[in-house]
Length: 314
Image (cartoon, rainbow, N blue to C red; front, top):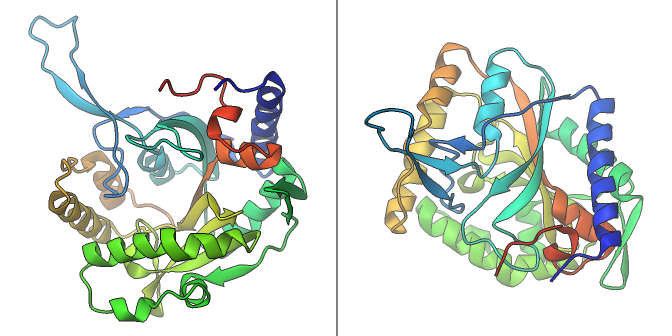
């Protein structure tokens, strides 16, 4: 499927408006490598792996590298080095992701602000979304209001409204908990969210914290949010985890889950860990936003190929 020329023009305008909105708020655009030894350990995300051989050396040692699934680790290393508010709009790559809202290569906008928590970041994300996509979008024949403030609902409350009994999962190992949550999200929570328009889903349970900070006075809850529009995740943000030892512990836990699922274990991001331990990651908040998905909603497109100039070849 080829994207209509008009769609591509508007999609590029959306990206330009997004860049302008970030620049206006004092963010500095940065560039980080797409090829990394370790782009992340999230067991829900599978990177593309390549073998690199430096042909200009007499006996080139092969290296295993991966296309980044997010620029997160590299951007946080810049924050460790004293950079302040930074952003990046780049192509990212994820194995096996293909469907109406998914592509193995897509455009991500990611930004970080030292000194903020997820609360301040949510307020900024909703402002920028309305600036870029407009005060309202029409999806599936239904008008969806994007003007701030958008409703905020906790994961526990949303699950209760959707008929999901999360309390019955208490005591489960994280691997089993994640399986139950993923299943419930697809079967019950996502259909419920589709009826709600645009909202922030926040305060994720600790097993789904990923790299977000746990609440200081509630270690069962993570300071993480998702912007959901028409039942689709548009942005995923949090107050960032800064503790180096907890980073290592979560990495090891992710590796255990990958082994249990029969997936290859990704080597630890030692340069990132060293920067956390020696330089320190300042308290900050960060978010990743799917540019293609935002363009789809703004244009009323039903498939991601409708907003991509060169869709992934089937």
